[in-house]
Length: 161
Image 1: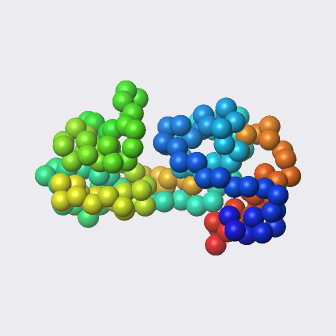
Image 2: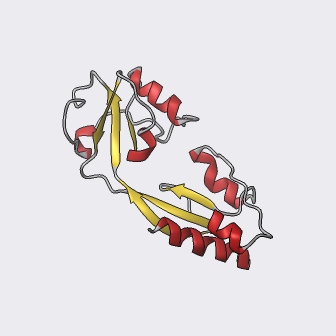
């Protein structure tokens, strides 16, 4: 942000914290100009720039049959309830991981997302054959303002290092 602000002092940057399920909509309705998003998200109407990727991990109750494994394969999760599937969305990572700890399902997350949440009731195991969680900068496809292009260029350059 500092690199962009020094080059564009007339542009103010304001960070907006959104839940994961609100991010794409915030771009589409104009609440935010640029998003830093992790896939999966609906990218229809968005222009995206991939800036990185993260390993997937599965969070499970510490007493779960897979909790002591060094890695887990996706096939080993067949039949398991994965939170934030089609039916129920949690409002935060904390809520999701509390539900996992209480035995209400499992959670597949990017490695860094769960790194800030520690509980003896949870196990975190790398998901060996899962595709990485892609990190993207996103902007509405119809937005072509020079300051947005400049911001995307600066941010992509800095995030790629």
